[in-house]
Length: 115
Image 1 (cartoon, helix red, strand yellow):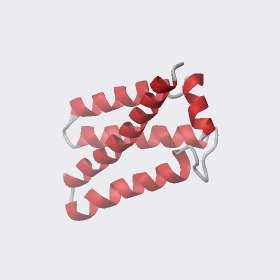
Image 2 (tube, helix red, strand yellow):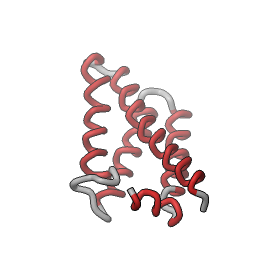
Image 3 (cartoon, one colour):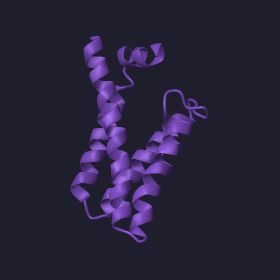
Image 4 (cartoon, helix red, strand yellow):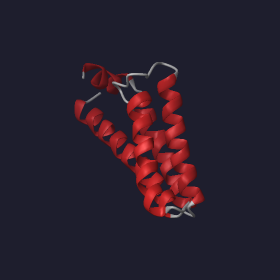
């Protein structure tokens, strides 16, 4: 697999992570206390991602990492759905599944393991 395609997929995985954090911010904006939740929820999601789901997560593992990813992306989609953005929630869910599925291909996994 071409390295350019691999890096493009990994860039889309990063965009997916940013979209998930934005989804938590959207949900926080729709609930009280708005000024607190719009900042705290994305920060908590980032902390969970850093600790359990990132490639160099200190507490990640073969079972914990996929579970944390499903939890973060699933809750992000639910947050968008609850905020009244059902179409965006479905789009984020489909995008997350496709991009993270592509990132598991052996040719792309090699790029992550090299880093």
